[in-house]
Length: 52
Image 1 (cartoon, rainbow, N blue to C red):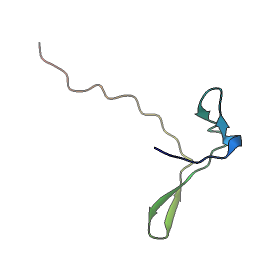
Image 2: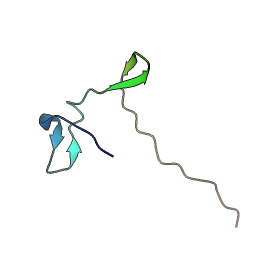
Image 3: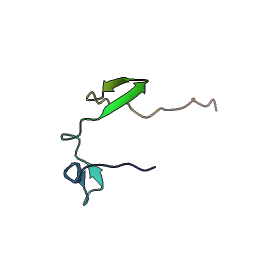
Image 4: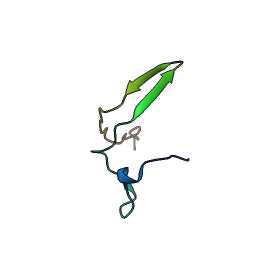
């Protein structure tokens, strides 16, 4: 995966993006774009429960 990011958005020590400064725009299709400022954290999936 390649990406390009402005230096002021990148924390080189932590190898992380400063999310408070990062305001990406997502391409949907054709000439349609969307703002992506909403951030949601989903818990990891638990998977199927096994029957023992």
